[in-house]
Length: 192
Figure 1 (cartoon, rainbow, N blue to C red):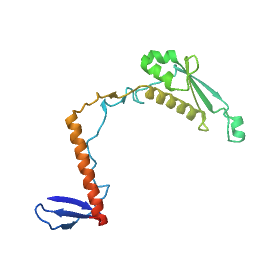
Figure 2 (figure 1 turned 180 degrees about the vertical axis):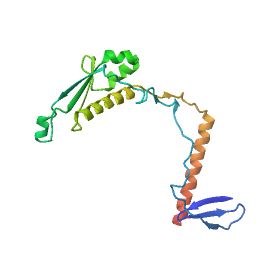
Figure 3 (figure 1 turned 180 degrees about the horizontal axis):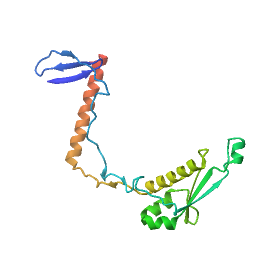
Figure 4 (figure 1 turned 135 degrees about the vertical axis):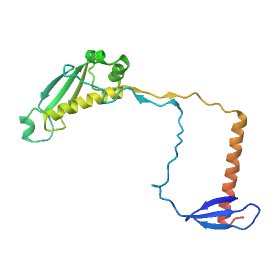
């Protein structure tokens, strides 16, 4: 039986051996109700993953040093009178005691917040009006930097070599499909 879906929710059904076409109506399904395919094509042996989670990263107050200063930017006279910009400095040596070399190296490479001599990580925040909220934002930024530094990239799969026979079969299928589509287009235009 040959079955083909046509536009406007109709299906063309042609039983083998018969020259008559039967049309059936099809109820269009909502894309929200249609289940997604479970298969996933990937060119990797193993997917990448984070070695650390944000909940696993603990920053002891003895690790960092906090400085508050007057912020810049809009805000009128309130900017001049309150010291709510927070700068958090962490020694990379202290971080090296807690985390392995790979994370420290990735932290030094990815982050533009490390000083030129790679000895100190500096993060600042001036997003909120409160210095306490800016301190929490700085700590969150440091945690995010450490988590992103713990990323382990995916391992690529070995290349799949196809035999010449499979490749020629694939080319033949594409050629037949292309010819069929060309014939269908010409039939729709009435150029038989």
